[in-house]
Length: 302
Image: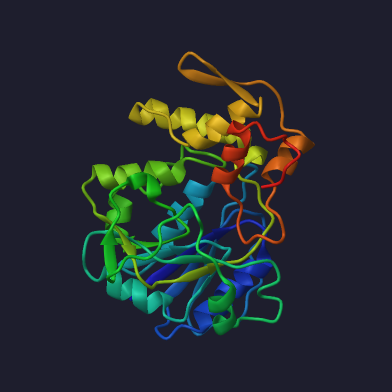
C-alpha cells in the first residue's frame, strides 16, 4: 500500500481537483494525509479511502514541518508526496508503487504543466495530455521505467515517493528552513549524503494546475536569503544561487563578504518582471535571469 501526502494553505479548488484525481486512480491510495498550514481544515469531496488533515496553523510558511507532520501521520510503509497544485494521472499511485517497489530509493514522477483555464470544465485527462507542457528547466522522463538522477539539486518535492522508514530516519525535511526556498535542495543533499539513490521515473505523472506566481520568487526574497544562508551554514556552500544572482541584478540584495544583505523591498517593477503571464503554464527563472544579464529593462514580463 502507498499513502499520499500533501500540504496546503489556501488554493482549496486545487486541492479539490487533487482529490478528484485520487478518486480516479486505477490503484487507490491507502489514504490521503494533508499538512494544513491554516486555521481550519479543508472541505473536500467524498472518497473511498481515508483522508486525514493535520492542522498546524502558523504565521510563517512551515513547508518542511507540514510535510514531516503528514509523513509521521501516514500509516503505509511507502509514501508519495504530491503538491497541492497537482492532479494525479489515473496511474499515479500504481506507477509510484511499482517504480519504488521495495527498494530504498527516492523516485520522482513525471510533471507536466497546465495553462490557465485547463480545469474549468473538470478533469479531462485526454485534454490535459494535449495541452500540458514539460517545464523547460526540468528533465524529461527517462527512456526506461527508471533513470538515475546524478545531481541532488534536481530534487523537487512536487511529486516523489520513498519508503516511510527511510524518510523518518533521515529526519524528514529540516524544519529550520522556514518560509519559501531551500528545504527541497537540503533534503536532496541529505538523501544523497546518506547514499540513497535518486531516480527519475517514466510515469507516476501529475499535472500542475496554473496559478499566478513569481520566478524568481521576489515575494519571498527575505526567506530565500535566510534559507540560503542556513544551507551555507549547514553544508558549506550556497544554494539557490540563480535566484540570489537575479536578486543582486535587480538591486534587491548585495553580496557582502560571504553573505548577502537586503538593500530594499521589491516594488511593482520587480513584480512585473517576474510575474507569470496568463498565456504561459509556468514561470521561468532562467528566462528572467537571462533578461537581467542582458540588461533588458525591468518592465518586461516573465
